[in-house]
Amino acid sequence: MKKQIQDFNFFYFIFNPVVAAYARFHYREAAIRGRENLPKDGCYILAPCHQNALMEPLAVLYMMHTKPTVFLARADIFQKPVANFFLTFLKIMPVYRIRDGKSNLSKNNEIFDKSRQVLLSGTPLCLMAEGRHNDRHQLLPLVKGMFRIAGETQRSLGDKPLYIVPVGIDFDEYERPYANLVVNIGKAIPVQPFMPMFEENEPVALNQMRDALTGGLLSVMHDIRSKEHYDEFYTVCNILNKQARSDRRLRSNAWNRFQMRRELSHRLDAIEASDADKTDHLCTLAHEYSDICRRLNVREKQPSECWPVAVLLAYTLLTAAFVALLCHGGELGVHARWFVLAWVLCQPLVYLPIHLIPKKIIKDPQFRSSINYGIHTFVGFFYSIVMAIVVGCMMGWQYGLLFFAGSFVCARCAATIVGSFRDFLANWHYRLLQLFRRKDTKRLDAIRHELSSLLK
Image (cartoon, rainbow, N blue to C red; front, side, top):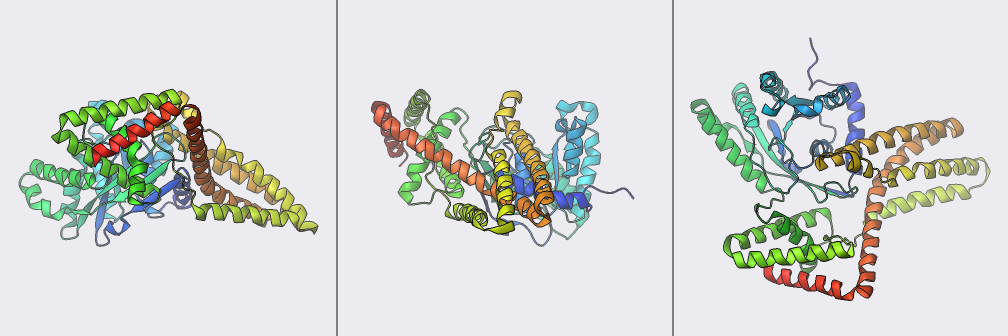
């Protein structure tokens, strides 16, 4: 019997935790909320928003930990044999669209059948609700293929429930390395209440499911409704985020920044709907702020001043342990010197500006982060294996294992340390500008104050 994509795969079982771990190492902070909303009494379809190519599936992979999840993705990324092999290994199946050729659309029937089998086996199925990625914090119209799969699967399940789970995934930076990730899992939507209409009038039922999921996604993601003033509103969200959190005495973490962006967006959407003159004034101020930032070579988004204590403490203790080994006499001290030398040789991989490679060769900005992740994961993982073997041969297998495990600790700590150090430099850069470009920085402060007053 032919093996199904949802069936147990030993190599996937071994490699999946590594992929999920490196997905976490790609971010400075990763906040996951709403795990309790994942159904425990039935099958479910995960329906995330889609803004950053392959990074959403990786975020779901990290969110689900070791629980196998099957994904559907656009068929054009399967064209190259290497990509096809890797994506299939990660339990991702292709979905064909009209742009892939009308002759290929019939292949979706087989894919949908496989999707139903995945759900009937109890394995979660993940479909990107919008059908294509979007470079804005803005929900696109949802495609109906998901709801057809849901209806037909629920018909096969009978009384056993099936759910659609809205998942808001937010990247505060699409391309910048060591940015932040937020995964916000919403309330599960049961499919059974839609089944009477599905049997009577399928198109109407599909629209009803689509409307329910649209509402669910809007409640868990950062969505700027305005199309005309999107760029200006997004700029204002970045400008005021730090001050708004400070006024509320909220800690500087990924979740609070995400929540504040959502709140500011809602206020801006309300202003646009009620006061055109005020909206125009907000947009004028946002443009002026952006122009000054470009002139001063500073970012609109104010850097955080938070250095997570737990991560810094872990890295400090690790370094202190190595120093203690170095100071130890005898054979252990000699081994420790070789071990620290190997450890230091491994560190530069974490700090290399790998993200500049895809930035120069990948035209689609939404794929750059995915390519950056791929390079970082494969180079870092295999280099760590090679170095662990070298250390093991020179010093003993226990040192090799210690080095390999330590490389994961290093990768986790580095994401926070590099991001925090980058913000530290940005803060001091701005303080120097306050001394030497006082007029411009005072104007930035005045614009922030005025924008804050307008949104109250």
